[in-house]
Length: 302
Ligand SMILES: [Zn+2]
Ligand SMILES: [Zn+2]
Image (cartoon, rainbow, N blue to C red; front, top):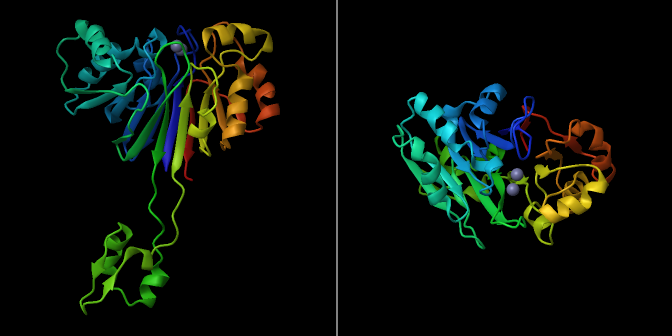
């Protein structure tokens, strides 16, 4: 089970009633935060996301609306006397960006682990019990989409275990995938007592890009797609194509093609005052579309 929240849903600049787009994914008391624009530490507080739980910060790209809040967030963590390391991952050049931004916060109370992902072939990260996949997007600068996955163990079947006369003390090891030897010398393999594989829980965050072949494959079958909706008006198509962004309909098409279970639209233009007015456009293409708002939350149980 994972909890997902969007503390902010705006693009470009924060507004009095809309923080910049970011995504908080929490699992068993540890959290991944994707993007950190100006004021993100306040957005987290307003949305009830506890900065002390932050384990990994993923940066999609180095436009200010996705990274300029880094130093404020780091200082907030210092204010909480954080001592545990924080992993920060993002495009090549991340080390330089972080050291430039933190020039005004030279002494942090905790170490930073900086990971620069390969531009073309980023390796998955295993952090906070979750697996993070990155995919290069099309934004005119190096930009990653992220997919966060919770792998799930197969269900342990106590009837199968009882039929094999396995003592309960061996159940946990078998459920963890270990082969055990019983007191009478018999060897039991996990597959003898486990049911079939379970689909992982997946959340995909794709903003600041044009759609392209292969993007639907990255988001294939995800439980939640968080997709960019800079504008909903098709008259803005020329502008979003020129600036490498997506309309509501682009994200809805992506959700449809990828077979996502639901779509949250985010990264609205500051000029878009009422994103909900456009949700029907997305729903016509992908019925499970929602115009996300600051603080929107979902618990995904699979
Ligand atoms: Zn942006
Ligand atoms: Zn951008």
